[in-house]
Each structure stands twice: as C-alpha cells, then as structure tokens.
Image (tube, rainbow, N blue to C red; front, top):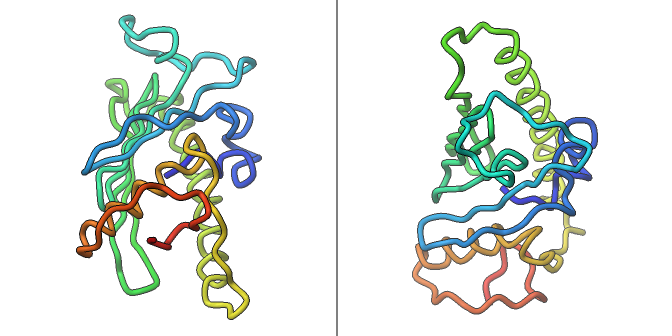
Length: 182
C-alpha cells in the first residue's frame, strides 16, 4: 500500500503507467492512509470517466487503506477494492474486485482490466511470499524507510499499530525501519 514498490516490483504491469517517481503521499488520519499514483506522460487516459473529473483526477489513481486491512483504489474508469484478512500468523486471504463497471460486466474493457488487476496481484503475491521467507532468515535486518511520497503510508500503518498496541506514537525518524517503533 505504498508507491515505492510500483517500479521495481511491477515492471511488467504498472511501471509504464504509474512509476514510483510520480507517486505522492496524501494526507492521512487516525483511521486511514493514502497515496496518489500519477500516470506517466506517455500513458493515455483511461476511460470512460466522469466528465466532472479534473485533469489530475483523469491522470492518476488514488489509493487509501482504511485500517487495518481494507484498500480501495479510485481510478478514473473503475474502482478497485481489496479486503485483506489474516488466516494465520504468517498467511492472509485476499478478496478483491472491481466496481463502477458499465452495465455489461462482461464487456471486453472490464474483462481486460480484471486481467490486468490479476497480473499485478500475482506479482505482489510472488514477492510477498519471497519476503515472508526472507523475514525468517537470521540474516534479515530492517532498513530505513524511503521518503514519505514512497513509503509514508508504511509509517502511517506502523503508527496505527503502535496506537492499537498502547504505545505512544512517535515523530517519524527516517533511521527507523518499517516494523520498528521508537
């Protein structure tokens, strides 16, 4: 749920549309965090979209995580949602879908977008499975978070968890890695 991974992890699917360098952190609150994935200048507008959308709204996707585990992506043409739920200490289940589709959910544009979503979800799953294995390695060391536009949503989630666990929220310290609380 951050823009940092878009280019390196999704080189085949999302990088050409929404590269990491164009992501921006959006204002957060005690119950949510979000970022905007702006489209590359060479990426055509994705429609159909509502005529009231601004130029920026037509040329970006906005993602929010409502804590602890509901993610929604407002795209110019469809809305993508994900509900992530724990299955065990080291596994999760994901239910996702697309809403705001035309009257015919079997229309080729809808099916094409669903195939696209499945492709980037498969990329995420493969990386997260490798990450889970790496986190159990005795060589694993936490590193610092990237700047807010790239990983600010990770810091927001860490702070949410700290509040829920009864620890005082701290000012962000860039030397602290994800998962560490000062």
